[in-house]
Length: 240
Image 1 (cartoon, rainbow, N blue to C red):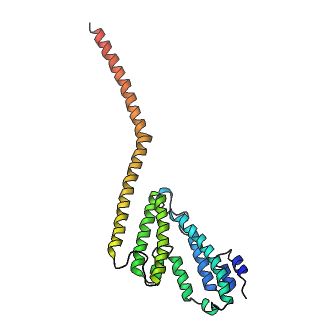
Image 2: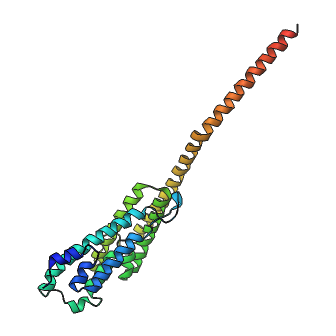
C-alpha cells in the first residue's frame, strides 16, 4: 500500500512523490519541466534590450504551478495505485497518460504542446503569436503584454485539451482569416508602441535637455538684447 501522506511530503521536490510511488517517468517529467521553467530566460539580456524579460516571472510562476500540480497528482495517484487503477508497469514506460501530461506542460508555451501532439499548423501559428507578443512585451516593458502572454498560455492549454477530443477552443486551422487578423493586430500594435515610444523619448529629451537649452538661449538673448539697447542709447546720446 502506498501512503498518500508520504507521496505529498516527498513532493516537496517536484516529482518526488511520483518517485516514491514508483511512477518514475511521470516524476522525471515533473522534475525536469519544473527545472527548465525555473531557469528559462533568467537574467537574459540587459535593461530595455532584454527582448524576453516579460517571460521571467511568467515562467517562474509556471514552475510553481507544475510543482503544485505534481503534489496533487502524486496524492491522487496513490489511491489509484492502491485500487489497481494505475498499472505501475505501464507507468514506468512512456504511457499515454504520461504523453498527455507532457503535452499539457509543453502547451504552457503556446504552440509547443500542439506541435508535440502533431497539430502542426495550429501549433506553428500559436508559437509565432507567442514569440511576437513576448518580443513586444520585453522590448517595451509593458505589463499589459505580459498579461496577454498569460492569457495566451491558458488558451493554448485549453485548446490542446479540446483538440484531443476533436474540437477547437478557438480559431480553426483551416480558417486562416482569423490568424491573419491576429497578425494584423500584432502589426498595428507594433506600430502603435513604436510611435508611443518615440513620443516618450522625444518628450523626455525636451523636458530634460530641450527646456534647459531653450532657457539658456532666452537668457543669452536677453543679455545680448540689453547690451545692444544700452549701446544704442549711448550712441544716440553721444551723436549730438
